[in-house]
Length: 232
Image 1 (cartoon, rainbow, N blue to C red):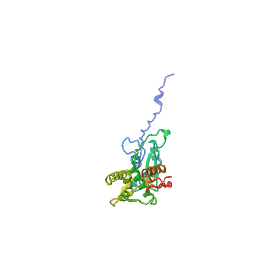
Image 2: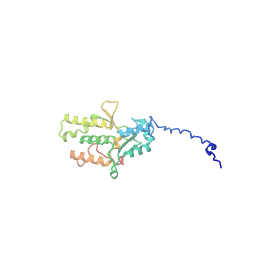
Image 3: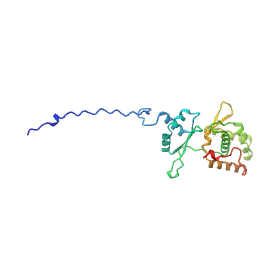
Image 4: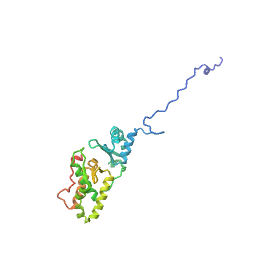
């Protein structure tokens, strides 16, 4: 039986068309493998950099945070960070996850407060809680200094030394975003984030230390009232 060349009679198999690479609609540069939109990425960066995202100061980032809250929360959890969003106050920020069982590292920095720093925080928080949520809390630098002048006597500080320490504490809270300048010189707005960053246990601990230093164990100092309902 004569041999036959089967391949000569077999139909040609067409080559598969070249596959177009998938287009990532959120790709921002060549070889960008990210999957978040540009706005969500900027919100993520701002949240990690801190101190917070505000609906008033950062409206675009605030909208991006709300729109991408689920995915941002997931990305932050990958970094051992917890996302806190308070829509009523218009504030979002991150804090280190408290999970000893996971040996979670500290990702965002914490700041040590001096005694005068702590007293200033308590005074500002007291002023903030005196206004309804959504309302602006405005304070005068001189008024706050006068309210804390009791420290000068208790710590044996002369006027010059107390003013120096108070100014350092005041500037520190401006740097942290707790205080924001207004159009009026010497007047500052207290950020609503102060309602959220301290838990009731921390407030009570600060108040107790404040009272111990001042020797006023029977009553709370001005500015130290802690309403647990605002911390729940």
